[in-house]
Image (cartoon, rainbow, N blue to C red; front, side):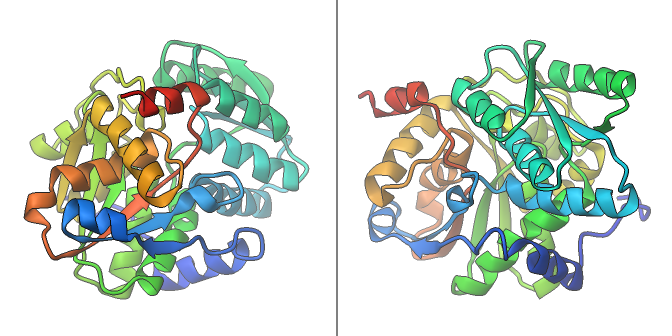
Length: 324
């Protein structure tokens, strides 16, 4: 790895982010659910990021990002971001709290419930492109044309905010043998890695991607950036075709493994989580548990962390998950 790679956020930086975030976003629950243990043979501790005010972990990163942006550029006229939902909600929510215009570009056919949620938070929503990458490219053109600040989907400021849930997780759960974390563009994984490194823990970190959006898994296997079109219809929150360069360096350095789960396995995990915990996981939010189920024969008797990264599933997807 290049020695020029920036460092992960430090413990002091994560604690500073937590001080900013906690008055608005209380620490989310962390529970070991007996039915999940019965089902997998390991003690499964679930970090419930579906319990943030926006139903997903991204809101933490957006708060730190907007705070840093407005400290350095207080005259910012507005922000623009590309999103399939949770990042867009985070930017819209945090921008509205700071009185800043927010424009969000989503791919056509995006989750309608997430679109409605972003609009309800004050976002100007634009639908463009067939997948996230095309929405992202369009957002960059609009940023240049309209003089808006383009908020990236991956940035060290976002990681610093997201790392606060990693810190909460490690401080509230008993010592964990491994944590399974969904990877979209990588802020969630890098946030948990930041907390692990800052606390000097030996917990294994396992990234989980959709088999229908395997760019990070392929990149990890080949130890180089691999671009692969996303075709997932269940886990839009991880529908990444092009890994971020910095995120990929951090993932390759700190991940013990990256595993894939199919759309069908994600749907089954959504149903299992709802039945065992009465918590709704969106498709991407169910990936970690789907991977734990897949690996259960090798995890017997271990204490395993499971990041339920978000619960913003559409009713259509929920109906699909509940169908036999």
